Length: 560
Image (tube, rainbow, N blue to C red; front, side):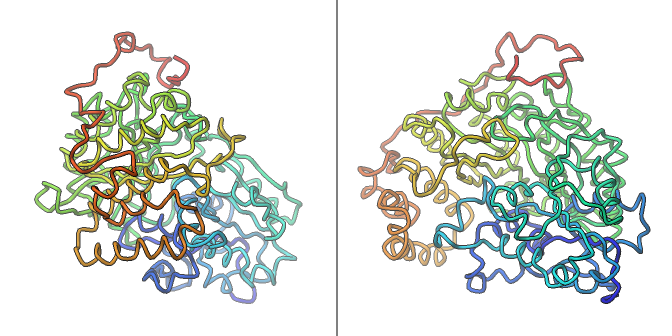
């Protein structure tokens, strides 16, 4: 097999396939941590994935499994292999005609990850990027390139074009977007040895084009929806109408995962509350409850995990959180001492808050708040967090610094909202604006660490102070961390980013607030009254309570 090879080989990097401790959070870290220091950071687990007896991968990202399923409609299973980089030499050989590579975040330059590797130096390569480069430059690919085509696709394929790496990496074709309706003709042309287009753009497919998978995905990922339709200008998915996969399709994929050893199912979606949505983004509570109960009832499913959601549905219909909690919390893999669950479990949900500025929110993402108005956004966030926390949902939330047009007053509004959330049970991830391809802000300039203002640095490090205090309460760990903060600043930080980060960084290091309060905007000494308080309720504007017509089910609120 090492000599002849398979006709079609599909591959993904180790770090993007990894499911260590069933933690999507830990996998995300691999796009932020520096590769050259990896051996000192205790993350050798990032390259350890399970391999089947025949050398194929036991689990890879869900998108690659979808491609495999489509190819199996036309090709024999004996023609196709799915593997990690270390096993590519077994499958890429004289008979190989096409290699398909999955690229989720190959260079580490998306919103949540573009920032962090640079704290170690401007030319530092994150683990994800190093592992993808190891895959795309694999000796077997170079040796057999004269008789095979190299196709790269996935959510991060645009990064390769943006950095002008397609020719250097000898990639014949980049696939950008949803690929279900372009995969088969593209791979068939490659097998025949035909010249491929340099780039192919996929579009939102019909539900009937989305295949059922044949083998296990990383984290037991099972897709439940596509698209969103809320219209956020920095996100391409938000510009595509939402659609839900049929329940029998979802349960088939769950059973496939369990049959190949997965005990955890990750329900992947752009917004959990849009599953089988009603008119005007209304949450279909019975359908959501039925979904979670059906997945949890599949024999062999021990844990059910969630991906993304929005705050507004939790505020509009708080009963949905209570109804889903028996499974979302009870079947979660996450545990924290602040949970009131008998086993200290909590549900995790990735929620994009993005800004506390009403002005920026109205300009760039007002559909997130629907059916509420933009000016109600701080109230929606605070009330939604209260409802989630009461039900043992501790969300992972993102904020975006450097949105186009951001002023000091905008940053202060975000800081005020952050201050009001100081006692929340959550993880808050500050990110920098990245002009992603195929979005309404694609031509805007991205934000840069070296250009952050003092207020933006304060926001950034206050977020991580919250996270450290909530998730890392061991006194010995905190003492060592606090000692390292001034060492980092004086040895490296001020040289890389200037003096503006100094006092915000010292807050992260638990310097006393009496020392910091005259130097920073927020005062945590107890003297400051929050600008925002959790409201008793958030009223839906009267004009948005009118009965919706069926044909308005997927209307974008930015058009209303």
